[in-house]
Image 1 (cartoon, rainbow, N blue to C red):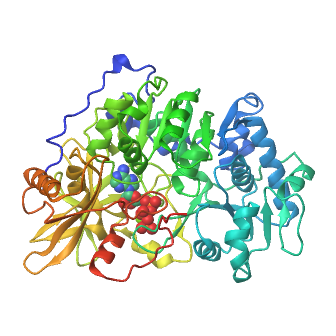
Image 2: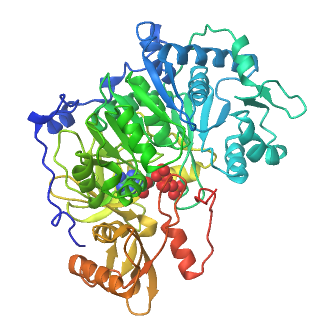
Image 3: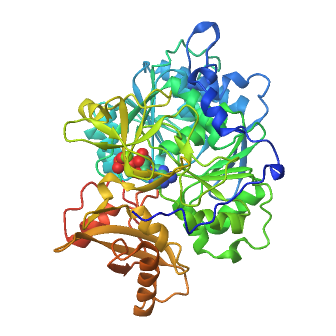
Length: 589
Ligand code: ATP
Ligand code: MG
């Protein structure tokens, strides 16, 4: 395996220049002293009545912070609407009462199919406070992915708007016998013939008083579907007690402080957009930016600048799109408010980290987690030096190891500097409690007391983790195990390459060889000279056994709607194999 740490200079931090003291000051010490009950008070209901996410997100701040902005909502058409903690709490109380009026019981499931609008927060928090299990769906899903998920979850209630309902739900409603109530946020009247209710008038009529009922920390709260990068999406169940980890991880890995203006760019239809786009920031009492619009370079830089964002949590795909726009897009802008930038979801690669440092004046802190883990597990911290390309070190309270599965159904923990599957010792509060209707698959994630993540990594001698690829994407060539992420890190460091995806293609001698697909920065012609140049670049850095044998230029790479490159699809297409589940594939609208 090539060693990726060498060619990238470590980014050193100078604590004397930090504008405020980070929450995590001494990593080693915090790892020794942290206990999961450190934040057990987050979301605790008065009188020993358990823990509820809505208590953490809203009620704990009231009445003192009723006037504090919870959301600055930037609408698609350029308006800006502020919603305070008090307003959000009141609307969520009405919503909870409305659910009770409809006869929806704790534990039953409610789906939310909305764009990034404040009503989404009202529904999610209103559902949580009444102990209804909430499942946010990505609004760009087509009818079939919507049907599939509501069916798996046996949803009884759906909150959406007229347009989404007509396009995505009406055509398949008769296939969803569990779905009894459809609440439309923008309908003026109930429509008994269509079977829809007008949310606004029901909310206006609902009782604004509501006390959160006793909630067991183990009561299910959220149902999140995975991105479907490797196959059929799985529904992961999360509990109310998870909020302690949402809070702790946002303190340590995102360095959230009271007074921050926080922008999480992930859609709440994915776990990142809920754990860190709804729950954690509200639990910290910060002000969030909520952008209804789609990605657009100027729009995003405007948002950072005008909202004076201090902490920004985004994803590699977005960062690469900003990189592609060139430095001109950022010239003359005042981004001095930014204190901390983090990224998740995909390998960021050293080029992205270094770009942040050079162009934003802030390195990008990569971190790692999954739908299943409910919160951040491995991260680069504000206080710590960054080794570009590494996803950092485990958070306090997180026990991570690298293992190899044996033939006898056991696992063996491997040494530093060797590759293997990333395994975590269960016990942190936001760990999922099951895949809905798939207990066997859930059980198969646990071996010898470890949760196996399905991702291959390496750990260096200083404890930094390096992502190699998903176990399913790993390339086996002439006895070597090649992680696509390592190859892609080198390719994206070439000045002409924006994005890269490496796959294995069959080879009679080596078994498999690496083939890479790359997209280019504007101004570079996809010609033979450039192909040879990139190949030479890769060979010099990876060696001939690991460097791609073949490089193909692409205009775009297939991605999930959450922005992850679908290597399995690239490979299937390249080899003429069946394409598998494409419900989360991003397609031009
Ligand atoms: P599915 O499980 O349905 O195939 P998915 O794994 O993409 O989909 P998510 O739970 O949204 O669904 O994504 C988690 C995965 O994303 C991780 O297991 C890992 O493969 C990848 N990932 C997340 N963060 C990082 C990161 N910082 N670097 C590299 N990969 C990451
Ligand atoms: Mg996964």
